[in-house]
Length: 318
Ligand code: FES
Image (cartoon, rainbow, N blue to C red; front, side, top):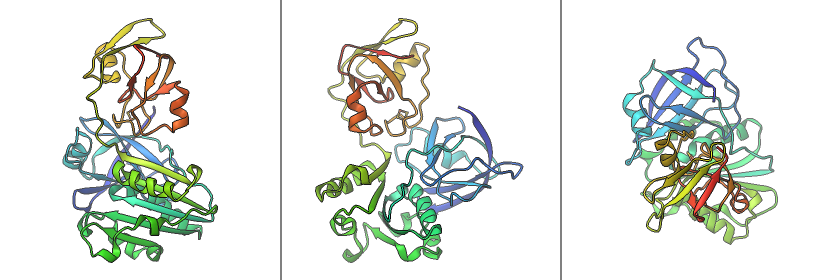
C-alpha cells in the first residue's frame, strides 16, 4: 500500500474524549480526491494502523478531516492518536478508499451512533450540496459527547438533523420505528456506529420489512466476541506448504506472524477488511462484520484477524 506523508494542520477537541485532526500536504498541494463514505488508514506513531472515516466535504482537496474517539480499552490506536499526535506532526496515511458509498436515491436516511457520525457527516454535506432530500438522526450519550454539534447547528443543513441524547428528555429520544419508518422504494438507509447501535436499528428496520439492498452499514467497533468455545486448528500456506498451528488462544494473524508470515491488519476485529485472505480449502468460521452472509457462504475468503476454522485445516492463498 502506498503511504502519503501528511502534516497535522490543526488539532481540535470536538467533544468529550473526541479529538479532531485536520491533515494536509506539507507543501499545501492537493490530496487525492475522495467520495462521501471514504476512510483512510493512519499509521499511529509507535502504534498500530487504524482506519478513520473522512468527515469533511468531499469537494475539498486541501485537507482530510478525521475524528478519533478515545476508546477506554484502546490497544494503542485511539490512545496513541490522543496522547502523541500534535499540530505540526507528520503522519503516514493511505489514499482514501470507500467501502460505504452513497447510492443515488430520492431520499436518504442517515442514522449515526456516536463517533459513527463521521462518514455520515461527509454524506450529509454531499447531499446538501446537490440539494438531495435527506435526514440525519444523530444519537449520542450526551451533548458533551456530541462531536461537531456546533458545526452542524451552524451548517446550511441544520434543519435536516435530529439530535438524540441518552440523558436528554423523553421527547427527543431516538424512536427507531417512528424515525426510520416503514420502507419505501425511493429511500436508502445508512447506519454507522457501534455494533449494538447498528444491530438495534437494523433489527427494527428489517422487522418493518426494509430490504437488504436499501440498507447500508459500517461498523465502528465490533461487539466483544465470545471466545469460550474456540479450539486449536492448523493453517497451511499454499505457496510453501508450511503448516502452522493456531492455538485456541491465538488469532490466525498472530500465529502467522509468529512464524514469519505477515498479513496486513488494521482494526483487528473483523470490521475493516484490511486482512482479507483467500481460502483455498477447508471451512471458515467467520467472526467478522465485514462480509455479507452471501460472501461468507462462498467460503473462499476470510478475515484472519478474528475468524477461525470449522475444519481441522484451512489452506490459505499466501
Ligand atoms: Fe480489520 Fe481484519 S484487520 S478485518
